[in-house]
Image 1 (cartoon, helix red, strand yellow):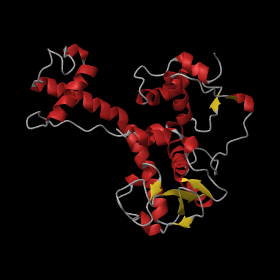
Image 2: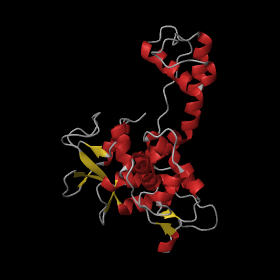
Image 3: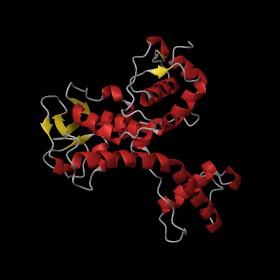
Image 4: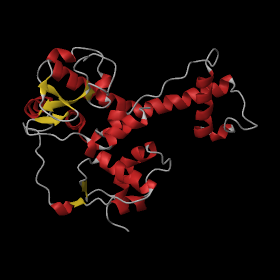
Length: 290
C-alpha cells in the first residue's frame, strides 16, 4: 500500500498549492481527467492511491519468512474459519500447503477488488502522459516556496519513469528522470488551464447529440451540506474522508447518508478505523447532529 505520509498528501487537498489564473496544480488536473474519462465511476483519491497487493507464489517452498507471515496474517484476518490464532501465541504454527492455497485465494480476491481502481488511475496516468509528451498539455514547475512558473519541455515526459511524479506531484528540474519524489530541489508540477481544457474537450465522449462537455450549473447554496470539523479521532477520519471525495467540501444534499457512507468507507478504513464510518459521525460532519 502507499505509505501513509503519501496517502495523507492526497487526503489533504487544502494543503496543496493554490491554482492561479493561468495554471492548475497537477493533482487537481489529474482529478479532472479522471472525471472526464470515467464519470461517476471515478473515485478520486481512492483510485489515485490504490495499489495491487503483491501476489503469493504458487508454493510456499523457498519463500522468505516475511512472505509466510503475510500469508498467515491474511488467513487469521480473512478466514477465521481456518481456526488460526495470531502469530506469537502458543497455538500459532507453520501453514500447510492447503492453507497456503487458501491464502493465495484471499490475495486473488483482494487484487480483483482493487483492480478497477488501479486501471482507472492507469488510464488517467496514460492520458496525462500522452497529452504532455505530445505537447497538447503544457506543464510547468514552480518552487515549493512560490514564484514564477517555468515551462517543462515536452520531452521530459518521454519516459517510462513516471509514477514517482504522481506521489506528491513534484519534480526535480535538475534531474527530471530521477527516482525521487520530493526533497531538496524538488518543485510543484502545474498544468496550464487552457491546454487542459482543450485536451479534456478532446477526451470527452458525448453520449447524445450534445457536442460539448457538460458545464456545471451554478448550484443553489442550500443544495449542499455545510461541513463541520469535529474533535475525536473517528470523527476527524470521517471528516477527512468526506473532504477526500468532495475536495471543495460541497456534499450534495441529494445524496443519502448511505450513499455517502459507501463512498467514504474505504478511506476511513485506510485512515485506521477498520469498522468504517458510522452514520452518526457522518451526520455530525454534515451538521445534522451534535
